[in-house]
Image (cartoon, helix red, strand yellow):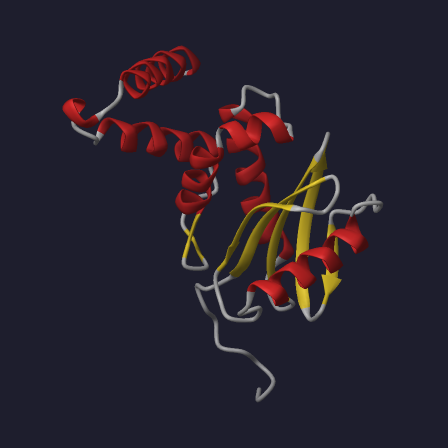
Length: 176
């Protein structure tokens, strides 16, 4: 019984989105495994080199479990320890990808993702908080983001924010 690890809610070590050249577009690290930006970039390069030509969805790398999904010119990664359940990591990855896909209207590519980078960071924050999985339902994540936009007083919103919020509310009412 000495070899068993204590269960923990802190299951996610990092969420990363890279382009098809292996360059970082989005990254969020939840522990100090890779404390400096240099270490993070080296890890990302290593992950990209091991996964970008592979057909599998799971890789064991540097003592970590990495689940990933590639699309047109983007690679989505969720990183956990080797003791983490791969299905749980995959559910986070699926939620991330589905949320981004819905947000970008099924047009998941680098140019459009960069245009909506603020919403992508909100999606990541809704899914994982400090390494703890908070949500794995993409529609619920997007509902929370739309609700957050409604919390800003109307007098402090720009015209484009008001129109964007109205468009999103109409879209969600049509989807439900």
